[in-house]
Length: 356
View 1 (tube, rainbow, N blue to C red):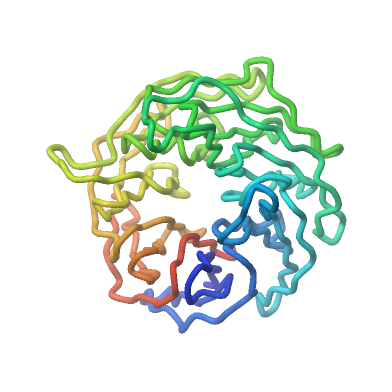
View 2 (view 1 turned 60 degrees about the vertical axis):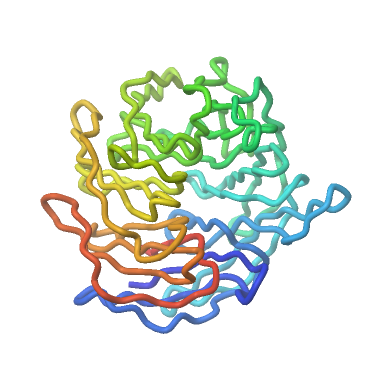
């Protein structure tokens, strides 16, 4: 199983790395540089797996030259080798998240530092052809003065029906809804443009259930997950549940990072930075409800991101501060994580993307 690792490049890292997971025992190959690029902090594959996109930008962007961009790489079917296609500026600060619509004709990115969401049209070869939209996010700020000093759109998730972009804005305590049109690349605020979250929660990343009926939002600042019902025809979200990602009685400092749903739909995972763990929730596919979590150490400091293999048997976790990627077996029935005993050393890993 081939996985790509996005990194922060302010130190020893040079860009996107690749490594192989042995699905028999969970061992990891020595990482290889797949593509040199600046701060590829989030990665996404186009449908069909022919193209990989990365959000990025310089470590020292300025207001005069924000430098944020999205870049595309052609992915060779046999070897998985990456070849640069092109890159296109975001027109704002450094992009932190990227997503591709289900047709592969539109790429969307979130700019946390510049407070904007941008869209790109895509050519037949997967190269970006134009930046088709750049929208600033606006609204009342959350109460956390240190982290909610201005709008901070942190992620973009495309809805299951491909009609909407769901944007988590950490600074505004809101999930914003935009209508998308892959044909033209347009990005427009929905008639019901936002869902207000509890003050100080700080929505970060989101994930839809496989059946498209539920959306789950990982809230960075108060270490929680919110479950919401989703109506694609109306573009409407309805709150169902909020649950902590930390053990009862935990008093240290911790913030949430990534959220993923197991392919079976029966388990949901969230990483905690500070507690340095992965929380495993049981999920009721019929109601969308989550049960209290179990916890396993992430295998290093600051588990920024993780990903599940397509068959749901393996999880790879990127621990930024430890500079490692760690493999875990996933129990089929319970979803419990068991460290496989293997790691790969990579400078400042912050994103994991299985090839497929």
